[in-house]
Figure 1 (cartoon, one colour):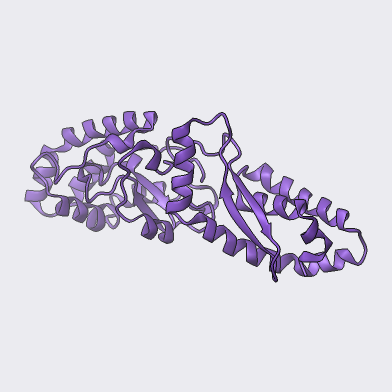
Figure 2: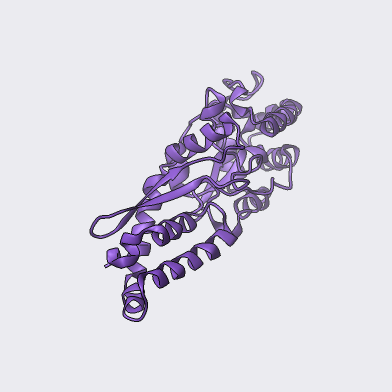
Length: 278
């Protein structure tokens, strides 16, 4: 998971742009009536986000009895995503992650925005920038309309939480043919129980163990030729040193990258370094 800088705009700006772009005078008029309500809800969202308690936000059917959930979904899909007046906001949020890498899986390319609190249950946050996270399509599809009921089940929110303030991702080598890796979470001791549970929940919900294992298998296949060539010139401990140097480089970029965990595990495996890569 990767932390992101919160969007540099607020819901008053995005909602106003939507209202000005909607041709349905009745709907735009009712949106104007609930504007103050939605702006106030954004402040409540921000406070809960800062406290790590977004699971406590109560869902609602519609917005203040004036605009329905279905209408808010139309505002998002038909206006916020497509209107010329709002595309700059959509684009700014979507391009916030370094190298267009999804902050939820740290692997795939961003293709859309996810409503952290699902719009089907929280329509007041449908165009609230703090509730819109740039993600890959697979993470968005996997999460769907999930909303945590307790603190530990809440997934990490890139705008409010830092998952790289401690080492939590590790891997182990499976002595199989071909060699494989299995990934696991092990949060640091200085993390509280809730944060530790959240990292496990996030890891499970987004199926990161399977994702990382798959990519690691490809990585091992890609480096096999080089390791075989190296083995003809060097002892196994030289191969281990090489793999550890790669791990250090990966760690310098991202402390909890799957590549860092993978290369450390490979370097630590006497079996792998002695020829298990073949």
